[in-house]
Every structure is written in C-alpha cells, then in structure tokens.
Length: 153
Image 1 (cartoon, rainbow, N blue to C red):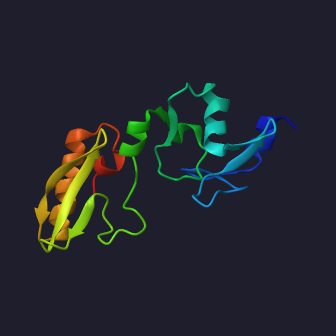
Image 2: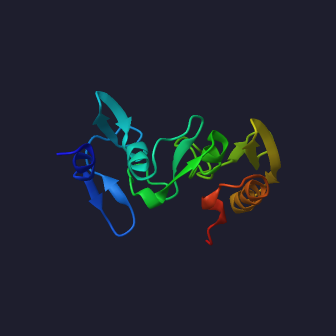
Image 3: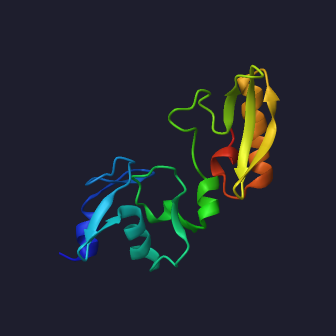
C-alpha cells in the first residue's frame, strides 16, 4: 500500500469536510506517520495535492474544522493571515466573543482587535451585542483573511 493509499484510508469523506479518522491531537488536529516522522494530517493532505509547503507559510483550514483534510478546504497563508482567520473566542472567555472583554473598572464591555502585534481599541459598550458588532467591524477594516467575520449572519 502506498503512503497516499494508507493516508486516504484513514479519511471519512463527508458532503463538506473530509475528516481524519485516526490519531487526533488534544487540539483536534489529525496526525499521520510518514517517513519515520509524525506529521499534521492537513499538511500531508495539502502536500499530496499541491507539493511542499514553502518555508514561512502555514496550511489554513478555510472550514475551521481542524480534523478536515479535504484539499479544497486548505490554503497557504502567512502566520498573520492564519491568526486573522482564527474562529471564535478563547475557551476561558467571559463574553464568548472573540475580542470582547469585560472591563471591571468601567463596568462595560471592551472591544479590541490585535493587528501586527498591537491592540487596536474598538470602543466600550454597555451591551455585549454592540461590542461584538464593533470588534467585527474593526477586524473587517484591518484584516484580509477573517472569513468568519465576513460571512452573513
């Protein structure tokens, strides 16, 4: 069996995503052993389809499904672009909204985005929904690869 046959035998092909059905990291990424090394499955899928990933670039999941290895759901991006396309808030977020934090001193929601390693303030808001709208607008102004913010709600 070839490496590609072995790889694709571990994939469940759905209507949208093709999910990795073998070893998964605690963060949700597939792992595949190849040439005595353990590699991320989505990178292997990308390389089978397109060739080697150039130095300094990352393979991004357009679908935001870390277990997906469907080549059409993967693209090359810079580290900055990969961060822009991050989906959702951190696990310990009080707001549940990426870029919105409770400011205890003001008793309001603070909206901010990070761009080129700097915080960009988007405002203080009494209502969480207003803070969310402001931070999305700010990311749309600053970012080019924030697909989640550009989708119709």
